[in-house]
Length: 297
Image (cartoon, rainbow, N blue to C red; front, side):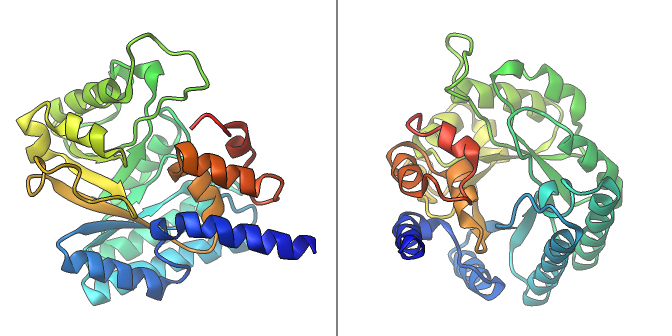
């Protein structure tokens, strides 16, 4: 009876999230990419299979990315690929991580494919070191960072990047921690964008809050001209009527079976998150950090 209940709960939650997930297979996500491309939208794709803890799973994920990169190249689809170190050995062994990363980079170079290394927690961390190691081997390699209020003036990030770099910002404020009065996501974005633009960095902003995006791009003509705005799948790709047709837009497209941790930790907010966490509470595949955040959306 318990197994049947868990299956029912999973189905209920999936109804909340299915528009944000491109399916469970590579063929499903390729169809979504093709459809978005036909509508004039660029995409960035990631596999939902995080925090693997053994070599076999890490190699499987690396091979999945390699084959997917080859498919994108063969089909000439307009899409980047985004990976997380924990998917390809980051939690297993440093040598394994670097081996897998090297194989993926080689495939990207052969297919002239743009790659992103995703940050997996708030702040600027060791992901930049991995990026620095492989950037000389792959000119189309970029890195996602998730700055928070602890570096609100952007001093740290200004030392890390230059005009040859591709950086994706996903600013974050943890409402469960104290932060300086007046600090909000708009200010965070503006501080980091100004620092990075001054260095001629190729810059993307990953954000699903349409009102925030509209406020952000209204601050400067340079923002509209030079920023790429990336919105997760399932959110409206047109932040506002005034911005329509003026922004460089992309869609962040996740696919795979391991969608629950992704949804809870990276996408869901507010009422939808509370409902999902309440339904999933007690199931083993829900991240404990997500449970702690219940009710704070």
